[in-house]
Image (cartoon, rainbow, N blue to C red; front, side, top):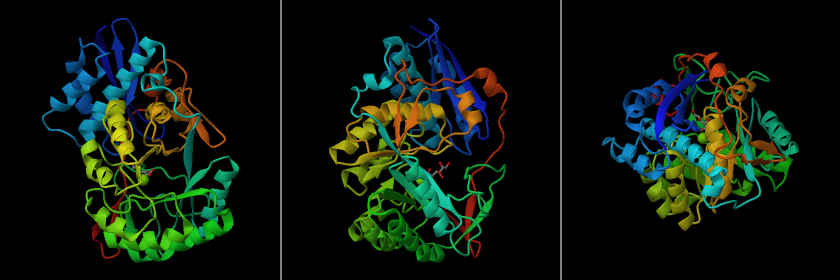
Length: 406
Ligand code: CS2
Ligand code: MG
């Protein structure tokens, strides 16, 4: 069996996605997500200008050899662009291998370890009451876990809330402006507000639902320690990205001061980015996922390392990760022993039309496809209807204009 064609498809059904589609000499095809929000064309070029020609003629079943060829052969290792490109190829090769074997990929990863995949949804609102009401809505639809993000009094916009928090305008979609929109951030206002959100949430929703919050990289270790301590009475499932990911020693300080569980990793692209956090048990959930952490092959290695330290998966799953990534993530979630939670933001109907799939959501759980491979594809004709649109993630400045973390 040989690889005969490597296509890189950039499509924009409401937001940009990059998909790798590999074809073999006996007509079996595989797809992989290679979307890097706001930097899509960098990955598309890496794939089509630097990797595609190196793949033609190779045996697609030699997944791990190809992974190492692309990783060690790059010389310039790691980083989001390189590892997202490798992820797209790797995921497509697992799709092919599953189709050749006639098995869903989870069966090639050790078989089913759980009946369904517990997911969490995104509840947001312009006020605490609106946010808690949105969370109650998710719970009424069967979700067992919900992330709560509310507007911050005095700030026009913040992470996780769509634009200026007008009633109902909470369809949050990162990278929806050609040039970065500039948000204003105020850490004091944020720290003063968040504990009240979870005090009301626990009072209204009770002790059972699993509640999460995404700090989105914006606190110093000591500020995060303060917030973690103040959230302890509300028993969150996790406080996410409390400090910028590169500040890994900051997690030691944070860990000494609070028992609020910590999740991080969506911006990590390799096992080396999370090695210290895992081996020193500085986190409780690792949020790496298929598209940004080198594909199924590398993600499995990260989760296996995490399992040695009782750290569970909590894979990223925002809508800027395509249905191809979600289909692959659900296959991994089905098989690993240390699954924790899967983030789930339903894609738009246009996106689901471009990426037909057979995973499904039912009563708070998701179920990976049982079809051979990943159980997802890209409809090339529909994809062609949505040309690339320049789009950037927002940026953040403090009130005095200082450039900050978004
Ligand atoms: C967020 C993401 O879902 C999350 O946890 O951190 O929405 C993140 O902001 C986007 O994926 C960035 O593209
Ligand atoms: Mg996040």
